[in-house]
Length: 246
Ligand code: PGA
Image: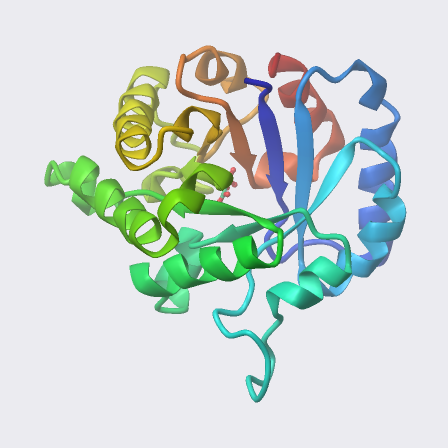
């Protein structure tokens, strides 16, 4: 499968910085062998829709409401994202699970809202350091994915899955390629049990992926791309990771 490299800008950027970063990335786009997307803060999606029009970078959002529409102050719906040409939306990032108390059920519902609007959810799963040390990694990621499978049924083959060990996010600590591959293989088996089309689901790795470690992670058989935070904010670093994805 073609690899997918996704930048997660988190709460970073400005009109000026976004234009400069996208401009630098697009200069190199004719050489890419993989699919590329950037997930931007909601307020910048309209700017990016214009900057990315007709180009090789797909537009992504970082979150969406579990509700369809109505009296939910501050929320952004799947239909609104679709209106702005959004192709992907991260759901269940550990920062939302942790700081905004998003449950497995809420994450599953958000994935469903995205799918219903024609947006591909990038569903994040991953264990904390304490869970890893307690030997619970497989149980945790399987439970998180099971909720999404339960709510979305055969549509599960339309998602993108991202394994992001919480202890590796923004810490400079990465799972070794073998550690990551092991969890990806567990997730792949769970997807296969849920859908006969599961092999088309890209499983991305995320958590301190950078220009130095991307190639060895991407060489693993079940690692189909990356979800990249910090390193996706620098054009040169993100471009060298994109070049490693072939
Ligand atoms: P990081 O973040 O690459 O900065 O570790 C990844 C993510 O949280 O998606």
